[in-house]
Image 1 (spheres, rainbow, N blue to C red):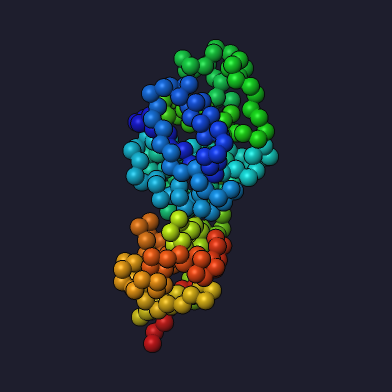
Image 2 (image 1 turned 30 degrees about the horizontal axis):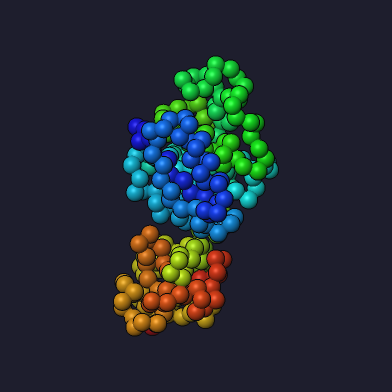
Length: 281
């Protein structure tokens, strides 16, 4: 099933024309493709945040949707590219760890290399019958693969020609930071993303917490100077200005300050270590 939806996720921001040009490339393939701007405000080169935000949106898009995610500090290098099929949706992205959280939560996803030659194959009515790139487009640049590789691939996939882009099965790059470590009643994680409210979302999922709760009466959360021995349900469970931790809407533990910024209050940034310890007294 092809929904003809392409969701864009980048760190390009809105100052430059990068996003607009990617949209133009997609629409030049088929003007009826619907483009969703998931976000373009990821901090430059922040793969952990990008991986988290990609996962949070995944399940809410129709089957057949194509996600085109471009946060690419290694653009032009020997880093690979990928085409993944997960839960009936597709991801086109650099193979640099962007897929990490998706694969943690959906380990049965199928990941292939992105077959770049498929961008110029003659089996679609929009591509000239030649093995050369379309004459109206330059050869791929070494600095803007979002325009020259990923956007064209996303458009082809969205209109049902993903098969020609599917290369060999691969084991993609996975960022170890997205997977907490469980050691003798202690879960070691870290902050993956800080949202615009200053809430600090960690790599510790509800499942990790449930494993601790199965063997311990309570859980102690520690991150820098933050310390709490109770998980809350809502931000309103504490007074305005008070700190708390709770499982957020994405299923991951977050540290927050009610009507304030936990990131500013505690000086947190992505990569900050977070520890959950099971206690029996």
